[in-house]
Image (cartoon, rainbow, N blue to C red; front, side, top):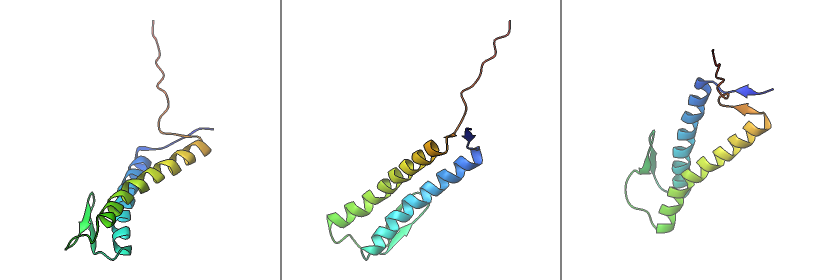
Length: 95
């Protein structure tokens, strides 16, 4: 049996992806001792500068890494439970 995601379900997934992406930047920054502000589609230092390029690069990279991980988990879930976003359209030929 195939299951389909509704438009509302897709919107919830997209919103959660944005939130987790930005939160991962903020959490990593806080774990490294920085004061980070996170907004809907951006995050950054509240004040000051990064202590090293490594810290800056790690905080920058963790957001996309979390997003890729979410995508892999979502794909595995979709394959496991045979979820589809939309069904192939059927065209009726009249005539």
